[in-house]
Every structure is written in C-alpha cells, then in structure tokens.
Length: 316
Image (cartoon, rainbow, N blue to C red; front, side):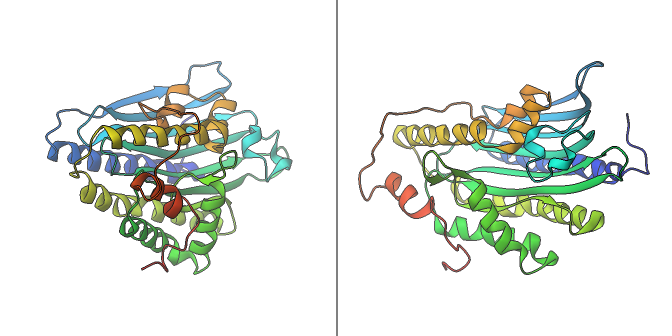
C-alpha cells in the first residue's frame, strides 16, 4: 500500500529518501575526488506478494572504492501483521499489533585504517493495536568506531551530536550519550564498540512533530559530524600492520551487530530483506585467539584511552 497524505509515514517517507540521496551524493563526491571510478549501486526492491512482510525500499552500496572499502545506506518502508520481539521489549502490550516501520540506516567501512567506521540510523515505527488508536515512536542516532584513536576526532563528533539534539532540550545530549554508551557495549567482551555518540529509541514524548523534527536534525547533522574526520585522515600512510589491526577490530563490529543489535534482529525476525539488513557487515574481518598488543602501542591505546566511557566534551 502506498502511504496516503493522511498517514504520518506520508510526511516522513519523502524526507528519508531525500536524506539517503544527499548522503550517497556526498560519498560519491569523495570517491571522485580520490580518483575512484567506482559508482554506488542503487537497487530498488519490493517485497513479493504473500510474504509475511510487505513494503519496499532502496539499497545503495559502494564496494572496493578508494575511500570506502564498503559503504551501504538503505531506505526501507515495511508493514507486518505483528511486531517482532525486538520491537516490544518496552511495549509488551503491542506484541500482537500490526505495524509499519520506515527509516534510513547506514554503515561505512573506510579503506584507510586511520579513518573510523561510522553508523547512523533514523526511523519511525507505528503500531496499530486492535480497538485502539495507532501509536507512533521515533528512534535513531549515530556513533563512531575508530581503529586508531584521535581525541580531536572524538571531540568533533560529539560536539556535532550535541548540536543535533540541543534544540530539543539541554537534557537530550547527556541522556542520549549515556544511552549510546550503554547500547553499543559488547557485554561478552566487557568493552565499548567505539567512542559512542548518541542513541535514542521509543521516543514518543515529543509528539509526532517533535519526534520527526528530532530525527530530521540528527540525519541532517550526520555529514557535518563525519566528513571532516574522513577528509582529515584519508591520506595518512598505512601498511599491513594497520590493515590487520583494522580487520581484527572489525571482528568486534560483526559480533555486536549479530549478537546485540536490535535493528538487525528486528529485520531478520520480521522477515526483512536479508541482503539489505546485513549491508552493515565489513568486507573483511578476522579473529585471533587471546590477541595481545604491546603496552604503549597505538593498538593498545585504542582500548586503554578510547574504548571507554568518557565525557568527550569536557576533554579539550
């Protein structure tokens, strides 16, 4: 069903699609500037009739570029007969409700190990319980996962994250920063996935207009948060040592996405499009048994100084 002008999704959908286009264009420009001839693949998709999940989307992905080894950004707009368990942890009364979900999600894996991986997501979900009015809420955020840490990069990223949510209350950045640190935590490793950012879910207290404005602000601040870091680091020389460490740390990224990430679980549990759901996976990753790094090395510094919970706005 195509959303009509009376549905909340009719307002959100065109903005999400335009956001996807703007971010793809910005990354494509980086590749062109770096001398790469690789182009983003744009793949529209539609769920087949009779599948448990209905809807459509556009997956955009670039692989083997000069700047990005793999960068995927997907738009999806789907509908299902009942919410999956990953979406009803805080709303058990909606477990059997039909739902509609739409959003943009991205993960970019750069080629140069000195450029961090980044994730951003903005989304809206509406449940329609029997005999009751529809319930809508918003979620999203962005977070940074460096392989080699730089305090100025972390501070910049967090300053932009703060600016993106400041109009909605002075409490939002502190709350969403802590929420991000708690969410992007590998419990079985006892370590943070990266240096964090902001994360929020199940936001309904701002109403529809306020919630929509919140995800718009976060989405529109993304390039400002990330591109300056890419431009600052992408020309740094690197070799096999740095590449092997990057792949080792990417293994942690895979572990989080498959074991803990609610978005991945939601997509797979609801019968979503697997190729689009797993576009966040890096092209190359590795694991090592009880890997140790020399004290004082840049590799050891990552876990000692960066993969910890810090007030990045105070550290300057």
